Image (cartoon, rainbow, N blue to C red; front, side, top):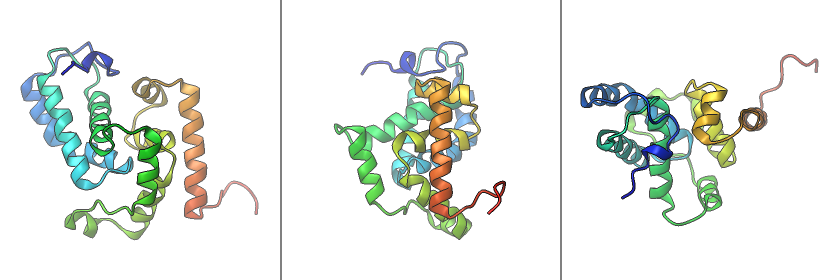
Length: 181
């Protein structure tokens, strides 16, 4: 299997020793799962993809400059490979739009409020690129970091983020409070 490390944004500066990977696994795993859930993964799909990403990080012989971004990129690729092995991205978008969001574990079902469930359902309905940009944004990444990780121009990230926000507002019935009605 080819080493994908060089193709992943954020590769090639700091090594990730095994001890750091273990700490990162404990700390970042829930956030990576949430990131993939925002992309439309089921909970088991997200767990599998996150596990695969950490295995790749452990196997990697090359240093990683930004482990948080690298892990998200590799986990997203793993999710996309496992859900639609040889189908184009549009087929994944169609499959996700047709499915009901039911990725919860019993604990998460108890913790999620109705509003959070509505937001996650609306997020999964977004076109893939908008959903992806929004997932990166919600995980606290800056526009430049998102652009680098996704291989886009900053302007494209800002445009997709703006469209995603507008669509989410419409789907959730949120009115702009700054404009007089």
